[in-house]
Length: 232
Image (cartoon, rainbow, N blue to C red; front, top):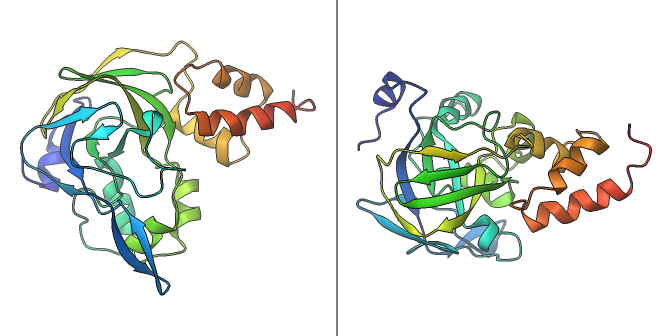
């Protein structure tokens, strides 16, 4: 499948699919005069790629303290956001994988997809765990070091998955939602609780009940919950 923006938007937005599968092994890049290891420079690959419990075959993360692991095994980013960022940054069309995503997807948005939702990508089964919090490596890649706050507040975070059933995936794979989490806390809502000071005590408590919630996010929300006696 070629990367054609017109072809993307001629397709019904209700059709959920993988447009590109992207991967990269970590390498060093020069940031502010220092060699920094990063795996953000994902590029699309042809043909099926196997997805294991800890991520895609041939893919890797540099800083495992905040990236990767079973709850951040696969990162997806909606193609619908590409045009927004191209306009915001006055940039030419971005190639797939620009935001460091493993999967460039169509038809899945942070305002609709919920933490704990289970999705099938053919035989591969993934579960939504958390939004992506940007780091300085994204700013460096986009040549816009000050974009991190705007990226966060835009709500266009993309989302991480954990792998429930290993399998292979390729461009053009249709996506099906197999199960909706009953708490219905969207990726955008969790992002607000986690980093934007949004949400009340009840919503935080509900989020903490989700088994699929990323441990990094859970730890932060547990701390906020413990301090939220005054919230109604």
